[in-house]
Image 1 (cartoon, rainbow, N blue to C red):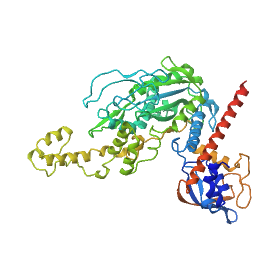
Image 2 (tube, helix red, strand yellow; image 1 turned 180 degrees about the vertical axis):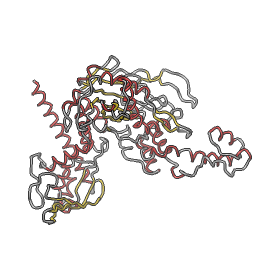
Image 3 (cartoon, one colour; image 1 turned 120 degrees about the horizontal axis):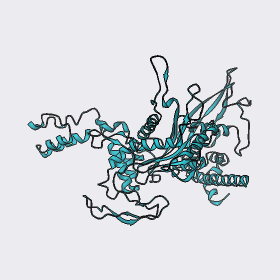
Image 4 (cartoon, rainbow, N blue to C red; image 1 turned 120 degrees about the vertical axis):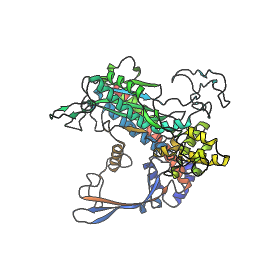
Length: 561
């Protein structure tokens, strides 16, 4: 045993729990902050009603078992994020190449790999070049903004990891409130875009979107009776703290008699048509978004930069010249590309790894953020505040009981407010302004901005898919549990036994019911040295994964040689 490891393991060696504790660390691959549970499992024989103990955590070190945290962020838990990325890869890959209960015939369905981005909310530092191209001057402009800051930047940000990239040239000019609200609206905007793509498909073929039954009993076929747009999308945080989506779109047929079937789409539903309809939808999609000023609503839309790439499937070969064909993508490449993004953080390391639940938490993370990131988090927190005044109609009563003939009716708009303030004393004006400001946040109460301030207001999942795209995270986790139940720590097959030493055919067996009783004991490791041992176990698991990946790559190369 290495000297460092010996020092960290000394408490476990002295109390005799090291071997069993090391097995648990290997089982969870050295999770950074596991969940500690205590409890037991009893088996009940359904034929006789007899109950026998099957497992008790009291036999384990500290009387607890360790459960992986499951965090997707590589900056928080590398081991759990690797597992999460593997499940994401399975979801994306199965929808393109089959497997995981998805038939191989999906490889013949037309498909696209698309990217949509956020619009601009102000000037930020940029490389001013496409990815992989040499950087150019950031912003070739001279002069000052109304706040006295330069409106241009004559530097060339050659390093893609330059900390200035994505930062606002002027924090006062940048529309942080609009950016936060756009992040909160982005998931609905993507749904609206898919709906518009269906509408464009219907217009192309001269059919209604939804089918219906006529008065004479016959059915009018709609586009959704013939074709389905299945998709999986991954959200990525940009350096400017805005979300953009990478997505795989696939055209499937519809079998009304067999909802579980995966038929090919009609011959007219080609990759060329899908690309055309998607571009049309992206250019025109609008989603109502709260106005930061509190009056009315704005329309959230996509930015000017969006593209569609060719997927190596049969229908994709018919894409037109407007679709990017550089770097032909196959199922494995797309799976690797999207799985990489689901484990990324938002550019703030582990500072924003968890929700901000109080003002103390807020001020605890702000010093670790860039000014741009801090402004986004602070804005999301401020916009999500004022929830305690909901229902008080403060704007309606902003000038009540202040006196003066000019204030005998409610203030309806910002213009009315500024006109009224001129006729008030400083004290009255301050009271009216405070009531107006307190009431201005009520239109964003449903966006849960404070709960998602650590994600700059984004309140969606980082990987989402349509129902019929492919498998699910739950199915991947269940397959992993089934494998662990039927294999030992070395990966050798074994037969699980019940409390009566009878083989179990499935999770509990037809003759046995498993009843568990568990108690949460805490998160993280109890002893300081345990965390160091976990880091060593995580390094060992990473080395084993890399060795297995290299061996598999060499085996594939030898098979194709």
